[in-house]
Amino acid sequence: MAIKLAINGVTFSYGSRTALSDATIAIEAGELGGLVGPNGSGKSTLLKCINRILNPKCGTIMIEGEDIGAASLKEIARRVGYVPQSAHSIFPSTVFDAILLGRRPYVTWGISGRDKQIVLETISLLGIEDLAMRRFTELSGGERQKVLIARALAQEPQVILLDEPTSNLDIRYQLEVLEVIRKLVTEKKITAVMAVHDLNLAARYADKIICLYKGRIYNVGLPTEVITAETIRTVYGVEAVINGDSACPHIIPLAPVGTKINIT
Image (cartoon, rainbow, N blue to C red; front, side, top):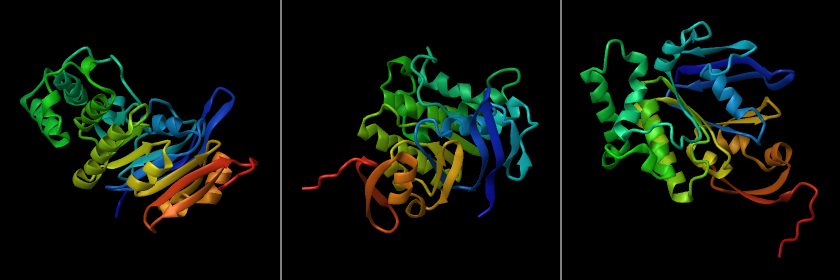
């Protein structure tokens, strides 16, 4: 498959503190990359660099072979969709209107019939027709995340970035949201990069795991290649047992490294 997103040597610093150093990754078209690593490892920083919320100190970010470093923010918004961790009250409007905001990069003189049609198609694709005329502020956490994904999808992006989309959701909504993301990647052939804390969910839904550690890429590969007891010990400082089949490892954390483990 062709490389859709190529990140080459991207480095970013907050003042004197380097948060991301020499990040190099390639994500193929129609592939879901799971971005994992402990707090402070650089996951959100990397996503924001790709989306130009942050400007890297050095390095290049290529989409379909084109360097987007010099692209306008409007052009980037047409090519990259971004889903934040949450949005509690930024849309004091209906769900339809919230999703319609995703068409802003294309609006010139006003909302077109095509803009409205794309919103309706997106609502149908995500199966949230029953939410369309409800107010965003009245929705549950899981429903809001689906609307945020729909808003990003309405941008018709080539790449979609998701910053811990299941944070603060119960297990049902975690699965529902991740099933939606998996469906979009499979059916729409969108390339996605998703930061996620839960290694078991990452192993289950991601095609490729990108593990960050202290601002650097520690390992990249299939879930079975990256999510190992050795990686969890080094990166997270936790002893763990890996079970499951050859395609989807299942992690059972035992104790922090150095802690005496009593198994009865």
